[in-house]
Image 1 (cartoon, rainbow, N blue to C red):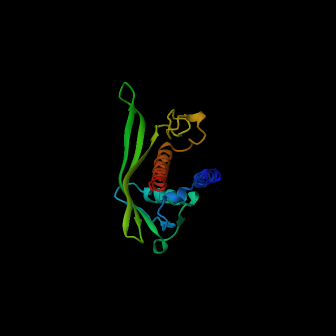
Image 2: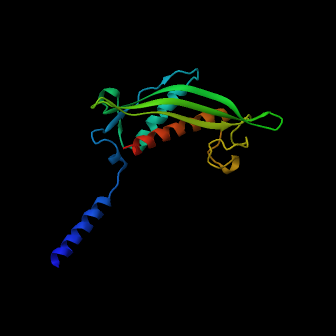
Image 3: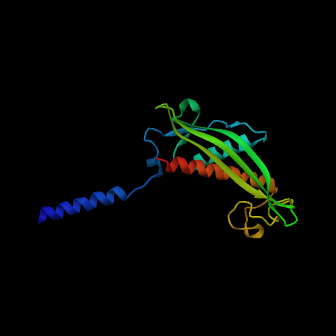
Amino acid sequence: MIKLNHIIFLLIYFLLSGCGFYSMAGSIPAHIKSIAIPLLDNQTAEYGITEDITDNLLEKFTEENILRVVDEDNADSILRGIIIKVEDAPSTFTKEEAVLEYRYTVVLDVEWYDVKNDVVLMQKQYSGWGAYGLSGDSATDGIDNDNDGLIDDEDDDEIGDPRSFAVKVAVSKIGEDILNKILSNW
């Protein structure tokens, strides 16, 4: 009887100790401790978007602190991207067919490369968008610019030039999606 209790105790101990700590870093291949994020390539005419997306990715990976952000020569992995499309098009119309809202969309191809094993870990297309109106300020345009369910006075982060804010929202969404995919893919 003592042996049975002892075995049950050990089983419970091992089950609980295995579930006691969870780390997102455990989902990334063990040999990958760092990432390089070089300046993205841009196949569009949109000025400044390359820097916006690259800076956003660097910021998100630095804040998350799961992988050290380093230069390409010292990296275990490299995240490369090509901006393939920027669209700035009417999205919502009045019944008289006047434009109420525009949608700014960015599309890019991303590849996450394992330097040590010389293999592509992830290859995927991402897109992000933000909405904006024609008023002079996103805080008064009557649009949910960042798709968070809040409009104007209800949303304290909707401020400034509407198109610039839409670009910021699109860029941030892409960065979040890429980071989440890398952290949850493994």
